[in-house]
Image 1 (tube, one colour):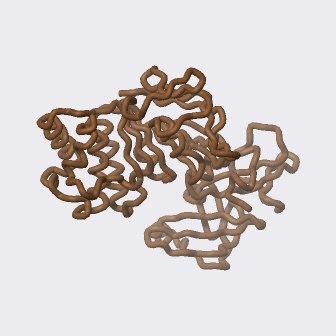
Image 2 (image 1 turned 90 degrees about the horizontal axis):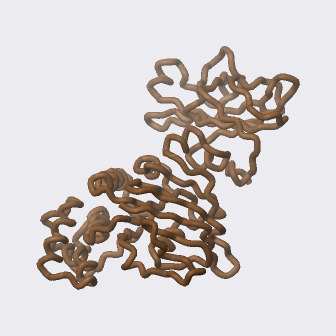
Image 3 (image 1 turned 180 degrees about the horizontal axis):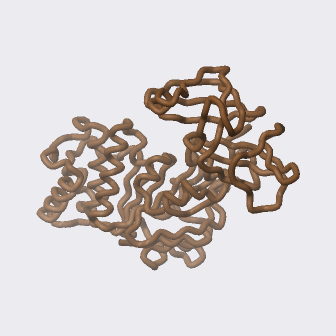
Length: 363
C-alpha cells in the first residue's frame, strides 16, 4: 500500500494556470477519486504524481519519500515510483499478444524469462483473461483490452495504481462491470488507487473518498461518497453531483418566500441571518400531488422515461424538475400532463447562502 502527499503544488502552461498551491493527501489502501469537469486539471495532477510532468513549485511524496520537489532538485523517474498507470485509451501494443503486453514492464526491468512468464500469467488470470494469452489486441473487445492494460499495470506488484478515465471508451454495460472489477481488485490486492474521472456514478460506486474539483482546478470538497452527495459543501458540489433544483428564496418578515411570489417555503430554515438564499433539492426529493398543501404550481412538461416520470413544474416563475417512479405515479393518480395544476412538497431542502450562475450551471 502507498500514501500520496501533495503539498503546495502549482502547475501551468504558458499563461494558463492549471493548479495553484494545491494540497491533497491519499491514505494507505484507499480508492481515492479525483472528480471534476473536463479541463479542470485532473489528468495533469495524475501525470504529476506519476512523474510524467514536474510541478513548478510544491512537493509530492509517495510513502513519505519525496518524488517531486523542484526547490530541492528532486524529480524521481516514473519507473522508480513503484506505481502502475492505466490510461483512457488502453495503450496496448497492437503487435504484441496479451501475454507479451502484460509482461512488457518486466522485460524492461530485465527479469528472467521464466519469472516474466509466471508473473504475467498470474496477472492475466487475475483480470479474468486466462486462455486468451496468445491473442492480439485486434482480436479483443474494448473491455478485454482494458483488462490487458490493468494486468500490465499490476504485473510488477506496485503499491499504487493511477487510473486516468480508464472506462470512458467502454459502453454502459461494460463500464458498470469493469468498475466493480477494479474495486474488487483493489480490495483483493490491498493497493492504493488514485482514480481520475468526470463520471459521478463511477466515482460514487468505487471510492472510499473523493475530491471534487471545479473548472479552475480548485478542490471544493473532500469526503466519502455519502458525505459529498448528502452534505455538499457548496452549490457547485451539489450541482455537479447530479440534476439539481435551485430555488431562489427571500425573507419577508419571519417568512421565506419562493422567487418573487408570495408562497412560503414549506420546510427548513437557514442558519444564517441573510435576506436572500438559494434552496437546493434533487428531483427525487420533491413530492408532487394534484392538490392539497404545499407550493402551488403548473406542470409545464411531462416526460415518460420508462421506469420514471419526469416533470417540469413552474412555481411563481421558478422551474423545478420532479422525478417519480412510473408505477407510483400510476397507482397514485399522478400521471400529469402539461398544463395541469399541482402541489409540491419536499423530503428535504439544502440552504445555500451564496450562488453564482457558473456554480448552478446558469448563463
